[in-house]
Structures are given as C-alpha cells and as structure tokens.
Amino acid sequence: MEATIINAIEVLITLVLIYGILLYWKRKLIRGYDIEHSNLAYTVFISSQILTILFMVMFSIDPQNSAYLETLTLFGKGADDLWTALSIQLFGLSFLFILSNAVGHLLFRTTINKDGLYEDIRSNVISSSIIASVIIFSIGLTASNFILKPFIYNWISSHAGLTPLN
Image (cartoon, rainbow, N blue to C red):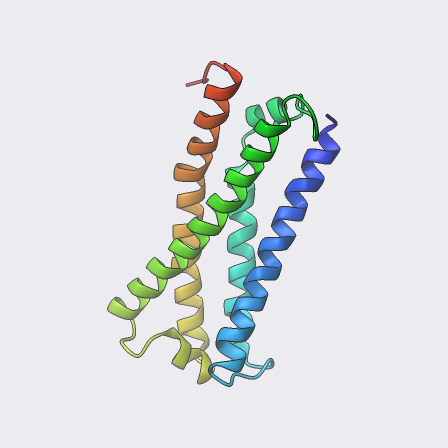
C-alpha cells in the first residue's frame, strides 16, 4: 500500500481527534460555564489542547511501524492487521489524552488552585490556563512517547514477526 494512504488515514485520525476535542470543550466550557469565545484564557487553553494532541500523534508514530503498515492492504489479506493497528492508535491516543487531562487537572487543583481551572478560565486568568496547559502537555507528550509508542511497536512487532531494534 502506498505511504500516502497510510499518512492520509493518520491525518484523518488527527482531524477526528481535534474535532472531538473542540466539540467537547465547547460543550463543557462555553455552554456549561458560560464562557465567551473572546476569552483569552479559553483561547490559550484550547490552543494548548490542540497542540497536545498533535504532538501526541507525532510522538506515537514509529518509522518501522509505518514501513510495515505500508506493506498491508486496505482490504484483503493483511487488512485486519492494518485496521487493528490504526484502531489501537486511535483509541490509545484518545485514552492517553483523556488521562493526561484528568491527571493535569488533578495536579492543577491540588497544587495551584483549589477552585479549579474552569473558574479561572471564566475569570480570564491567563496564567492559570498556561500553567494547566503546560502540565497537560507534558503528561500527554510523555505518555504518548513512553507508553503508546512502545505498546503499538510491540504489538506490530509480534504480529509482523519483526525483530525489535533496541
């Protein structure tokens, strides 16, 4: 299979994740906390959420895995491995993103502000939004690089009969 198709599927996965993030935070913050779109703290927070998922996607892709996936077809023999690997990537990214947000919000609430991040965003406190964003970004990047990438790599290696490069 051409590398272009695999890359297009990964871009589509990324776009679906970004759309889901924007939709979730719009419902949670704009409707739930009555925050305006012009709120700068909200803009900083949403921007960091998008950057976090983009970097998580980038760090979860392994060149050796991509080389193996390019040999598979969309339909027919080998299609199960392709769609399973892409599904693991999608669900793994979603799970780790949600987990990094939960842990980031918990750390923010226990160490910085007991009232929580959402009240600070409503009050347009940019510093709280930046601090929480950096915490979430750091956790997401670390989880993607050290949890998801090795998990996908090991799964593909065991199914493809590849010898892991240490």
